[in-house]
Image (cartoon, rainbow, N blue to C red):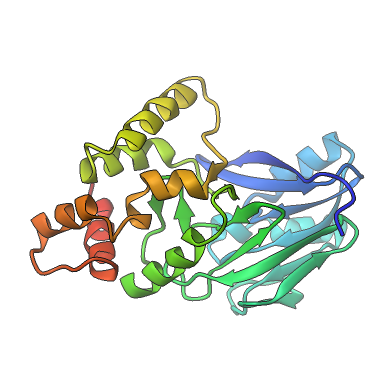
Amino acid sequence: MQKRPLTVTPIRAFHDNYIWLLSTGGNRCAVVDPGDGEVVASHLKTHRLELDTILITHHHPDHIGGVAHLVSLWQPEVIGPEDQRISNRNTTVRESDTVHLNRLGLRFDVIDVPGHTRTHIAFFGHGCLFPGDTLFSAGCGRLFEGTAEQMQSSLDKLAALPAATRIYCAHEYTQSNCEFALAVEPENAALIEYSAWVNERRAADQPTLPSTIEKERACNPFLRTREAPVVDSARELDPTVQAGATTMGVIRAWKDRF
């Protein structure tokens, strides 16, 4: 289906959001989670692009706040989960659906990933994952509307994707996430090396994303809740925890107050 390589470009918004722009070489494009419509419109006009599609992962204002403005300018298709809090959506998708962006030659599988919110979804295709606020590099989203069990299940789905999958998270949280991850696993050699690289990138005001599934399996404590060092750290706070979801709940609560 795809005729030209997919290019993914970050558009910075607010303090630490990334709005991801998808293009395949033509004058049409898509964006993921446009919380700020003005910065997207400015970028598109500067680069003489037409907005074909908006992909929405969840309802939070910093992910949908710019949708109405962009719809008023380009009338794109707006694709997102079933959630009345998302206005301007004209295509609803859920687990196992496939999204076709025919004019860009792209297609994405939809994955249900509740936990951060109850209706959160992710988009996966062309070796790329757009997880919204479910998965961050070296971290995961807060449990605003879901449970630790839901987040564990959601992250298990994402961790099972191919190792080379590029992860385009919605926020630049990697540096602070690495600080917490090192508190959980201070002797994780892969994490120590990754954290040093992240610090260099952020010192130069450069993005740390995309990450990869392989990197996150090695460094992200929320994808490592069955690994002995992570479970042991959780048991220092609650001796009754077991590997998996209970460890997830304990370290997520720890991260909330870190």
